[in-house]
Length: 528
Image: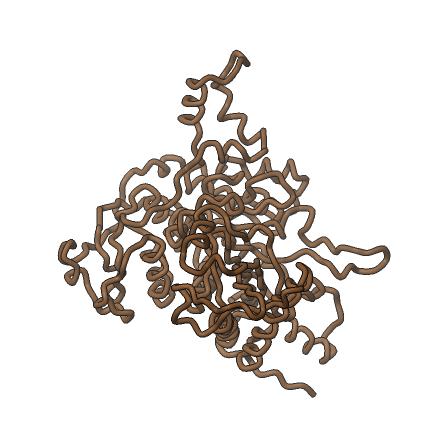
């Protein structure tokens, strides 16, 4: 008889599903030749670690093996003291109990433990080349690409502790440089199972709305990265693709759940609130309106590769089929804009199956399409498809997660965990909130996209009860904005707006007022 204690902090949602996560981190690690003088770059003067030393005769394959082995060894030692709640271990336990034998966990075989590899796209380029060339001693070393991936972990206290311990161990052992093209990706899932469709649809709807607000946590180079384009600005739903038409064209018209129709609510009436205080106990260093979001790029919008999505935006331009003139380009750009957030969310909520949601959330027609929030695992050719190798079930199976791709990589353990907890918080809120509460957030984000001095990402996190994580990430935001957080700004949030010279006294409450908004007139939404 086996006994498996319940992981600390593990919870089930009302429908019985449980959140699980996995994280991927990309970075460059310092490599030196054995016997080389150890000249310490300024950025590592207070660091505990150092380079990975290689034999002078090492070829590229030997060097790669040595680097990855050292990193794997460091991770293994860290996990020995801080082992989280692994999804596959729980399923192995269930099978030992004779509950059932099936193939549902095969797709997690590569994610039973930490893996170490490399990503050729993570390299020195642009300003990072200048940093290595001109920062003292940096150019005396080689910088090798590394990508680490965690096992699939249940969301529990010890799982976050494991992730934190691994990142801290790497930080302590090695000299690590984070180039601007290095990302951090989180996978959100439901253990070995698919995310229940109702939850998946709600998560997609919420992400479309919060995308232009959540991006305020990320530096500019991640917002413009072609491997994580904005779903809100550039996806198929942003082009106005109807859910019913998408289902029909995909040939995916099975109904997993009936559509959801939010009731009409008044749009918030925004009043400028350029204050730092977000609640009675939570103050951040940024006034509302200071944090910026996306810059809409018409050329990205029209470059998706779905001609049918872009046709409506090009009908009135260049009618003579001649060369595109500068005037044509200006007219086209003025005509191009994404679907407004409430319309887009409404169509997501009207979707009746996972492949339709996945299709609406994608950006391009490429097989490897990777927007900021990727639902690729739920696309028609992957969702619930069991891959076979001849008569056998293949050892390689499709994932069953949503991938969050827009975060910049970091070796700050608290930041890595904070991003993960925020992702889980967003997904669980979407799955468990009433439709009315979900719609309130949608409307708040709709207004905030235009009126940033009324509502921003720190308001959103405070509303969702994620102030601890917000307090961690405010430092990362200040860093990429090249700003300093005042020393008197306490992590406990006991500083109010009066402690800043350039603020007014107290923030004013913003009330929801009944008024005839631009969408309230369109009651056909809820009956057509």
